[in-house]
Amino acid sequence: MLRTILEGLVTLLWPQRTTCITCDGPLAAPLPPLATVAETVPVCADCWAAMPFTLDMRLCINCSRPLRGGWGLCAECVITPSYGRVWALGLHRGVLRAAVHHVKFSGRQALGEALGRYLAQMVEDLPDVIVPIPLHPIRERERGYNQAECIARGLAAELGVPVAADDLVRVRATGQQALRDRHARWRNLARAFGVRTGREPAWAGRHALLVDDVLTTGATASAAADVLWATGARAVNLAVVAVSDKPIPAA
Image 1: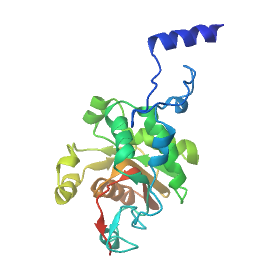
Image 2: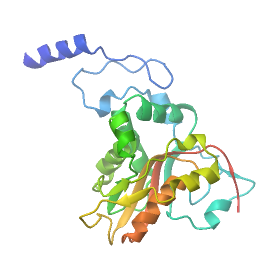
Image 3: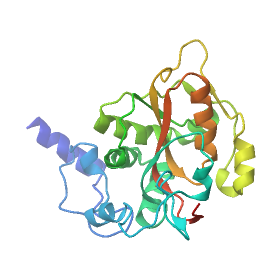
């Protein structure tokens, strides 16, 4: 009886969405108002299926970004980046781009966790600890959360690995990277990250998996990975929901 009353109140105060947030198509049959967070992510089955890479895509075997004019490594991964292998769900376009946008700018934290669970299927080398790339404190206060941490929670739930969300800190505000070209992004990220003082970082002597929403030029991930290597990480790989859809020349 109490559950019936609660469900009635929830339905009255917060009517359930009936359309997909990425394509605006109809969702499956309405779920109970008190369903789990994972169940209430308003993305349809067709959009979930459209997110991953397709088999015909020519991707760099290291960073998962699309290749132009060849196979194997991209020209940028020939010069070994600070991070190792990159695992990603798909290209930053279409429904996946829309989903990432909702996580970052529409408060869809549960969708971030669901994307992290989906992304976990791509990770081939189990880490010891998951490290979300932090926002600057001012940006995180404005947004109310760190989208990378939401994704990391989903990954951790699937992989059974702890999240270290407090040891890596952004010590310098870097502004919007999307407004800068490749070289400006790298210059802007120099010395942007550090380690919280007063404790040994969780990744010391361990295999760390950095987590972010999108990999574009790799400037952010490289700056963060440099800090992990310098403070004792044994290995540093990267997991992102999406990679840039702009092809990179093959090596």
